[in-house]
Image (tube, rainbow, N blue to C red; front, side):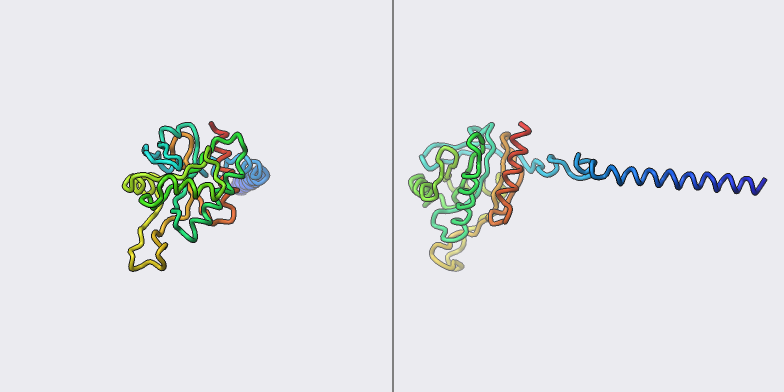
Length: 219
């Protein structure tokens, strides 16, 4: 009896091992299809989380017209910060924004916003000349100025970008006025901050356009 009981347990143990092997084999075979369906990796919603909803703002564009978040409702936009007297990184960032403008299909609803960190100097007429210098399409790309306190609030509290006015004693030159973020931010058609991109990055435009396509496809 003891021997028969031992054999019975051995048989069931072997069956359990065989069944487990079959299950593992099936899972391995199914893994590529599960990955392709996003079952084992983050889907689009995880790639583009809602970072925060933006509060409304009132700024002024290069043709002296008001631009508000409410007025942009239904249109996604990207935004960066700059100042026209900047001799270095701002020029590179503006070129990157121009590349984005040129890469957009005509039917895209994306708007481009470039917000000055130097509103006292960067008045609409100066912003207008700056935009024309870089071939900006004024129908799509707005260069924004406004009240300094509103500019600071929008940049730091709403877009979560960093900016610091350099004390005169620390300036490397007379135009070294501000230290600021080189990020580009993406805001969806509902006015929600969705992602940030390093403007000097290698694949910035490709990644941004892919994310924009996801947003527009989901609307």
